[in-house]
Image 1 (cartoon, rainbow over the protein chains, first blue to last red):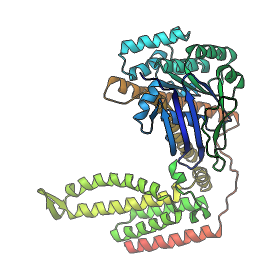
Image 2 (image 1 turned 180 degrees about the vertical axis):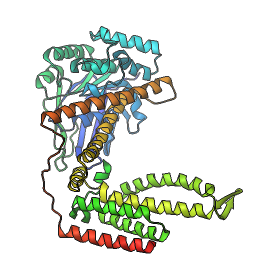
Image 3 (image 1 turned 180 degrees about the horizontal axis):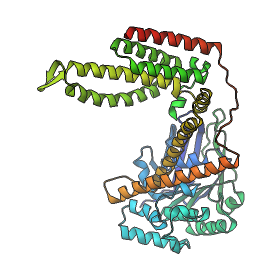
Image 4 (image 1 turned 135 degrees about the horizontal axis):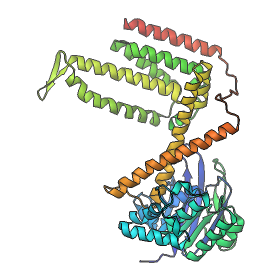
Length: 238
Length: 248
């Protein structure tokens, strides 16, 4: 497999919802292999929208998105993206939909063409690696918020991604679960993109920081600017 | 709901009280439902087109709704003219098409389009909160009003839940095909949709109870019926009376 230095590259991406609210304007962002990018932004600044654009859940109205060196536009372009980039939703409740934990974690590997037995074994291994080996037969929607978060993460990790995108990963977690999450993610050694306004968490996890500023309401432009040295953005149109 | 965004700018209909629009839509629907001649139905359709023009909807959304609806009518056109007994109009492939069948379907098409257009123009573009107020203003029973409001509100909620779950499936590379895995996943999706929606509904109910909900939504603004409303209802009644007269 060819290794591309640039993993995610957004150039002058604009996005507005169909009801007319402009969320992102002139976004430029580059994430290289091995980066740990932290994205800081207020509520409603478009962090989730940005991630959904990267995963192809939303389509930009203009601008280009290159992932692993490929120009991605159509739904089929994103199949590879989703294979290699894992997105952890802000609300883990939105991510779990199989009745039991084991089935949910096995869902991704099954989609990647693994056999039922392989998928089950991968799922069990992933759960064990996250220290929740005994969760397999629990009912997924009856878990606590923190437990759901770990299971959702297991569901992503079971697909063996190269990049992990975390949308407000610490939101609503207690200190113990948070520390556990930090420890797990830290040891994975994956390329990370993390959106959070938990500065304590972000400073521990990320090496490069970006500010996502600007309004949801049209008028002002949204730009990602490096908050520290190590600027990897192209100069967006201001 | 996209239909609410169908009227982005101000439309002359916004000047009317929601009660006027609701009442107008009800009278129009009742009259149109009982018309018996194509001529009177064509007049009703013309009136509905006038409403639609006044509502100034986004054209594409309006056309999309009309298209979807008329597609359904196309299927009726495919079957009814053959199967209705009556005087033979012409024959294709040995099947005879009856005059009565064509006449009947023409009536159905006119009537249905008139009703859909009028309802889209008068009611769909009205914000649901205004419609709820209008219903209670017109002394529609509370239970019916809240049933309407909450149904609307939760169709939206469930569709949001559905989108989130489908996204969760998509990011994990789910691609539907003909396999047990696909069917099982869809079954889980529907099951989880029900479970999540039910839990959310219970939470919202608790939140409402905690804030003192006793079965009535208080009204904040006192709407006033203006002279324009009275005038519009009067003109509408005269026009509809004219159509009824033409029908007899």
